[in-house]
Every structure is written in structure tokens, then in C-alpha cells.
Length: 507
Image 1 (spheres, rainbow, N blue to C red):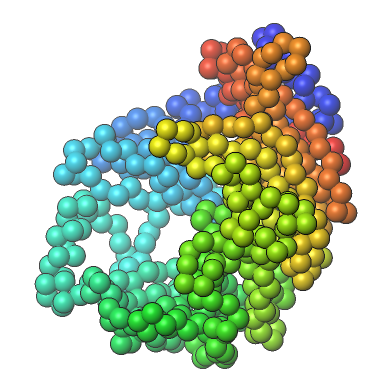
Image 2 (image 1 turned 30 degrees about the vertical axis):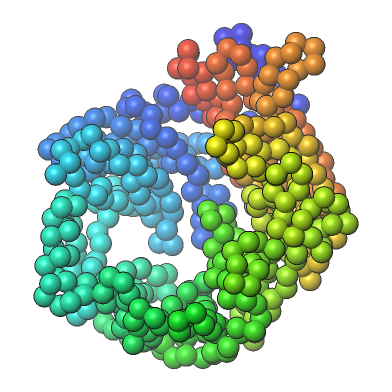
């Protein structure tokens, strides 16, 4: 246990209190993994660990979940039978206060290829501590039916083929339970190369249709309408309606009354930016690039050169929830950053074939946005991908660049990023983000991973460093925790040690 004791003292510098759990001893099954779960306001609720016990039936495996609160206290656990084709589950907390277990990996070896079926999700009712198969209600264009079929992929393909032969298209519907009551359903006719006859429909709790919003009724290969919903609340659905006609694209902001389905607002905003940028603004890969406040929805996306897909910078879009006005501001790599990064070019290239790649966006209460970038060089024919320094770009409430801070970092090969995660602190006025770096000790020449903890309070950065690896196979994996804390998963292969602990941050 000497190696554990040595590393323990590395954490004392930032720990005032700590709670711990050994994941290996929370259940008797094989530990499969755990993840954090959040409430509807994006506050940490707790953690769910999942364990496996092997095959329990012809089409089932036995699993167990363990729920920990945000202080790592076990509060609930239960064994359950899940699909045999599920390898692991990812948990999230829905608006009803129930925990959904979604298959995060498929076990393709569990059954023969011809018998493979998509694993189903499970639902945990915390009030009764019961786990049941999540019941899906499918809408077929006329009515809802409870769906529990375990059709194989081959069987589903046959059904789709038969429907298309009969109708000339496949009817598609996507059903979503909503906290405002009942369902929202998105339906369309899929002809293969195109879809048409789209509708957004709301149903009440008794599956009675309340309203129907139709669009793209004449879609074809050359023209179509796409409705992109960015947010909804108890009163409105906010989004954008794209109208494609050959190469011409028109964009309109749109607001729908969630109670009646009436279109309350529609305004052409195509002139605010070129169409490529507007398509890119709503999604930014796997990054969360938006935040909803009481009075507005703020999104940051890529700014593209017109009729090209080379990024020129960033776009911030604000959708006002009261006036329904949409405003757009732009920040350009070269024009706005050259005073701080002299070697930057118009597409975000810096030095030595490295480019700035977005890693996170921070939406602060004062209206400013922080852009966290990493210098990244993609893999070449005979070279590995590489990442180096992190770059934090300060913008003001008008999305104008007011400063840049560079965090020097060693070159990392084959890893796309050394950035880890972040959290807001002090009621959303400030933030802290975490990254790691593999550094060599000047005295011992040994390389170890170092955790860097960066707090931004009142516009000023402070940094702490903690060693999180050692040569004897001991490794600490940092993970998200409640405000003001970090969770550290201490793992040692030789000793089968898998411990999680909370450490308080110094700020």
C-alpha cells in the first residue's frame, strides 16, 4: 500500500474534505463503468455505476446498478435482467425524476449474427427502487401502440422493404415524452433520396392529438424544408426553418405556441450570415455549444467562407425568448486574433501546420463567451496526430475579442486532446476547467501525467498542478463532480483497486 500512501499526499495540497468509495466493492458483479447524471438545470445529481453478472436467459443478461449521490453515498441499487446484446449502460436522469439506462455498447458476440437485435433501454423508478424495461410507444400515423418487439436487424429490414414496396415510401415517426405533458412526434414519409410530408405533432397524456404543424409537404430531390428545433419551454418551441431550392438556401427563425401549435413568429434571417455558417451553428461536433438562460438562448458555431467549408472564425447567435429577435455577431481568426496570436492565418492555422480546434465554450452570466482552443495537427501519411498548447480566448458581451491566454503544454501524439472537462462556479459567474499533460521530471527524468486545474474568477486565471500517474501502474482518472470539487478515480491494475474520491478545489 506504499504507492497509495505516496499519491494520497499529492492530493492533500488541495483537499479540505473528501468522500471515497471503492467501486470494486460496491457490488459483486464485474464492474462495467459509471457516469455522472444531471438534473434538468444541468446540476450534478449523482453517479450511476453498472455491474455485469453474465447470461441469465436465452435473450437476457443480469446487471446491477448502484446509485451514488453527489457526495458518493450509496442511495439505491438493484439487479435486473437486460438484453443479452447489451455490453454496458449509460445513465441519465429524465424530467420525471426517473433514471434511464441506455445501452452504450453492443455485445456482438452474445448471439449469432442472424439473431442480433438492438438492446433495449431500462427505466429505474427511484420511488419504488424498481427496474423495468423501458416501454416505447410507437406512433404509426393513426394511433400509438406499446412496443416491446425484439426484432432482429434482418427482420426489421424485411419489414421496411415490404412497407416500401406497398406504399412507395417508409413512414417514419420519432416520439418524445415532454415535461409539458404528453408527446411531441416528428413524422415524415421517407422515399430514400428525399423525404416529404413532414409534421410536428403534439399529443396529450391520453394520446389525443392536440395540434399538427405541417412543413416540407412537397419535398423532392431538388427542394426541401427542414425544421430545426433548438429549445422549448412551457410556452414556446424555438427553432429555424430551412428552405432549400436547388443551391439556394433561405433561413427563417420560427416560434410555435406549444399549447396550440400556432405559428407565433416567422422571420427571414438569411441575410444575417451565409447559409453554410447557419447550418454549422446549431451543432459543433460532440461539443455542447449552447446555453439557455431565462431570457435568451445563446449558441456559438463555426463561421465559414461563403460557398466553402473552410472555417474563418466563430458566430454567436442569440435568440431572444421575449421579443423573438435573433442577433448574430462574428469573430474572425485573423482580423480579431492577430494582435494576440501574430502567426495566425485566416483559417485558424498557427505555427508548424497546427490549427486552433475548439475544445469547449463557456457562457458566463455577464454575457461574455470564453472560447477554449487547442493547437492540433492531424495525422499525416507517415506521422502521428499531435496536440500542444491550449488557448483561451476572452470575448466581451458583444462577442469582441478582448484577450488571449495560452497554456503551454508538451506535445502529445496519437491523442486527439489533453483537455478533460469544466464546470461553472460562483453561480455561473466564473468557471474552472481541467486538462492533463505528460511531463518529464527534471530531477528523475521520469514522465508522469500532471492534472492542471484552472480557475477563472473575475477575469483572472489561477492554476494548480497535481501528479496523477506513477510508473507502478497506478493511475488517477479525473472526472466531473459537484461545484467546487473534482472526482478522482484511483486505479491500480495489480491490486485490483478502483477507488473514487472527492477533492475540494482551492479557490
